[in-house]
Amino acid sequence: MSGMLNELFSVDYAQACERLRTAAWLLEVNVESIVLPAHVGAEGEPLATDLVLVGSPDASALLVITSGTHGVEGFAGSACQIGLLNDNTLLEIAHENQVALLVVHAVNPYGFSHLRRVNEDNVDINRNCVDFTQPLPANADYRDVHALLLPREWPPTAQNKRDIAEYCARHGEERLRKALVTGQYEEPDGLFYGGTAPTWSHRTLRAVFRKHLNACRHAAMIDVHTGLGTHGHGEKIFVGQTAEELARARKLWGSDVMAPASAGSAAVPVLGPIVALAHEEAGSETEVTTMALEFGTLASDDVRHSLRGDHWLHLHPEASTAQAHHIKRRIRDAFCCDNDGWKGRVYGQFRTAALQAIMGLGDAVQTADGKS
Image (cartoon, rainbow, N blue to C red; front, side, top):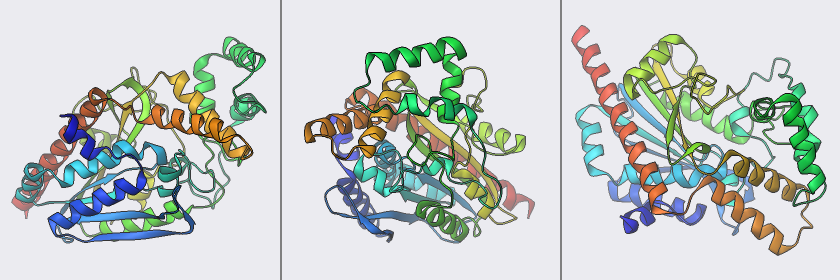
């Protein structure tokens, strides 16, 4: 088991890309690399979002798997995609059900390589897909905590810890979490910043969806994330738009698909998720069903601390090499747990979700064919 998992979970972005391309080569399918201009990776490597389509481009059913929307979270998503492309049983089931597979590897390649959750402009891609022709959403609560979350010194002083504890005592931990996670559009150096215009990743993904989601009648999308919830558990988070889509999602993936902020969910509603682009760019006859599959890693305080440290480092390039290494090691560990138990649970749950989607899409194709 350990050997198999090590072949799926890469040590860095460059190895993940190499393994994805090898898997595609063995399947004799093409890899389309969309290169991020003007930036290189942590080791000087080129950066790109890679696309792998398995099956007919004219298939009436399509399963889309996205990884690395939040850069450093890409280790798990990439492993799931590489595992899928090497899983002959799943690929055969997809073929029998007339379901094509589209792998979108490293939505945010800069963050993946540089071990950041955000992109090259400090933008959270999953908060960037709003309508920028309209006034941007306000997040007054984030304004109140911005300076607390990004202090001048790192590690935070005892006083900073007391100040945050006092804020939580006065307003509640949940208010702090919502202030942080919802997304904000006023502090470019802040956490969960949504930007002021569509990013390269936003524009790239929109074009991908426009191309591939207009050719099919039934599409399902799994966006793989890590860092939220119970260690090793994959929460199925509904990120779609309508009650009808939620019903379809539960039909595909089970009754434990949860809407953010519902009882028992670790998620809160967010502004500008990438699935909005899938809905906007799909053809008028395409039925789109989306889900974020979020795997828990560490305690929420530890994950938040790692994010704060990484943003502090971004603002303080003068930090020592040793301190920078420690901060980067901590954020990697916060989003990809380096043990076989966690990795096995991640891939096992993803494989089940992929199989469920393939079978459900196949049923939809058969039902449509029966009516035609």
